[in-house]
Length: 256
Picture 1 (cartoon, rainbow, N blue to C red):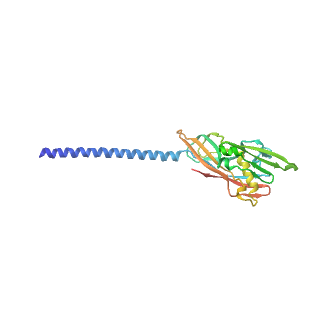
Picture 2 (picture 1 turned 120 degrees about the horizontal axis):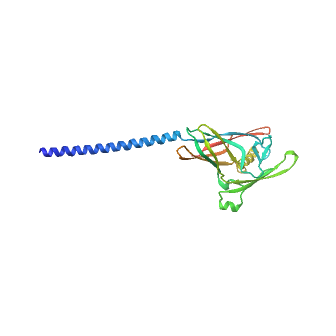
Picture 3 (picture 1 turned 180 degrees about the vertical axis):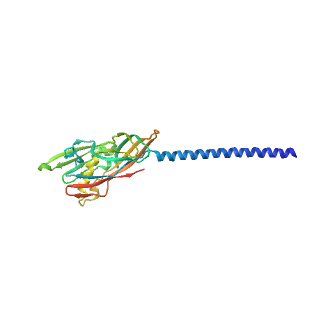
């Protein structure tokens, strides 16, 4: 009988030891999981975050092919022939707690090739991609805008050829709380000008193209982790005219 009790006690002790080991292992797993969660949360807090800022446009727009920034002598910059980027820039800020490395960015037009259609107005018109190009649904394509510059009492016919290609530009580093400037595609300014010149008339919506771009920003943090953010870029709803000056806002919306 004593031997029987002894065996029961030994078995109970073994079971207790086993459960203690299982509990310790489970506790260790839970602690490790909690530690991983804390590390991930800390990395999210510490990681850089690059955000574009809304910016007001205040420019003289006598015809579509003028930039929103003037040259050093105060003269209008024109889009003539092939022109990739505007002199007008938009600010970005790193709202994170650490620096961002190798900050790259590019633009894509929402709707792709179908977003650009032939449009005719009083003294300017848009020539979209060909029917063959539309059938192929090309990711990279060209379109053109022809306009007449009536300044100086002369008819100066100007042709702008837009390349819709997601060129990638880089900024080496953006420190925490620092701002930098991004270039924007010339075709966005030109299409926005067409809209701003004609939106005051009583025109149906299908006669106007209000361009929307997807701005993709990608970069690395101090641990070499890669991050990517996407934003919709477009003209905002607040627009006004005061004499020869048109005012509007370039606005951004997070797409993630």
